[in-house]
Length: 124
Image 1 (spheres, rainbow, N blue to C red):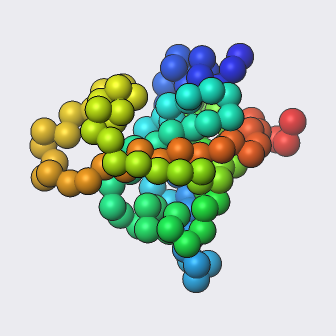
Image 2 (cartoon, rainbow, N blue to C red):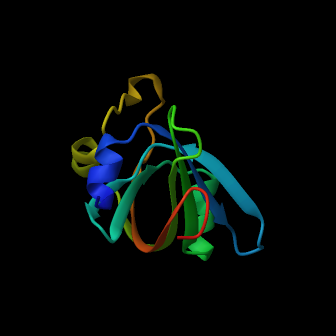
């Protein structure tokens, strides 16, 4: 199963981990990534710690745990490729976005190259 198909169908919870230039690690709950193709994952980000960390260190890891399936899921090892501010793209790729209860803020569309995919448990 390709990554786009997997994340379109899978339900669960994900955590995106980043580290800043100082090496301090941050982790945040994130929605499932959107896949442009099997090697390009996209996340929508606000201007918080995760986004700030990516300015000085382009590497991130995303851990996804499927709902109701024990230890099933994926680990994605990512490298930031680019980003843009594009509200129409946010609307296009966002599955269930409802930003009406948030104050107006900039949302960044951040593109990552997928460097490696592993199952949630194990190494193959």
